[in-house]
Image 1: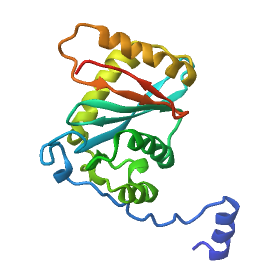
Image 2: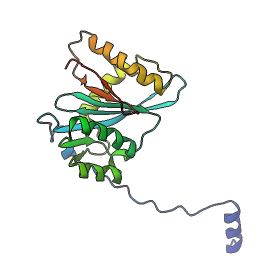
Image 3: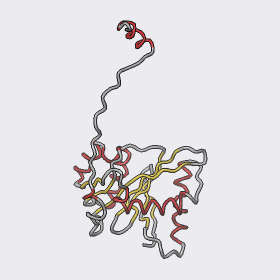
Image 4: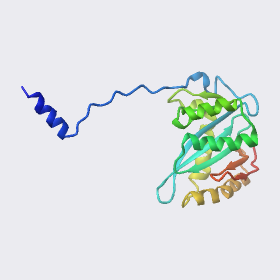
Amino acid sequence: MVNRKRVWRLWKREGFKVPQKQGKKRRLGCSANGIVRHRPLHKDHVWAWDFIHDRDQRNRPLKWFTLIDEYTRECLALEVERSMTSLDVIDVLAQVLLIRGAPGHIRSDNGPEFIACAMRKYLETAGVGTLYIEPGAPWENGYAESFHGRLRDELLNAEDFADIVAEFADVGSAFAAYFEKDVSSVCFKVVYVVDSTGSQLPFNGRP
């Protein structure tokens, strides 16, 4: 039988610790908030936002934030940073609301930036309803997923950016060139892009 004090000394010497009990994460989403059961009915009825990840020439992470109107298929905001928090997302959203006004709802997954207390409080104050989809079911945010497919195929996979500055310097011409193409399958148009300085980069895309 091993002496209890000896076990305690060895435990302390090796720096072992009793693992803390992990609380269950709160999930806010449900299938009723997906695109099938809660469809957009008019302009500014339902917006959708999400993140898509990329890397620059030096393999450093780039985090793209997109905001679209599901009914009109307009991209209302496009932001890229190394990382983004809920406060960063609030800053971008505030700029769009000043230009566009508030939507009825915003659809999203359960990403920490979207379910943060600060974010939910801001949306409640702005009078914007939340539609959190079922966790692990990205197809329920189908309009955002569709736009991300276009964005990756036509821009991110086609352009090799040196850094964030180059990313935003070239994104305008890249999108303009994309919408100059005679492609009948284009199903989104970029109305304007809000960059990290608050500047708006206007686009006149074909719906």
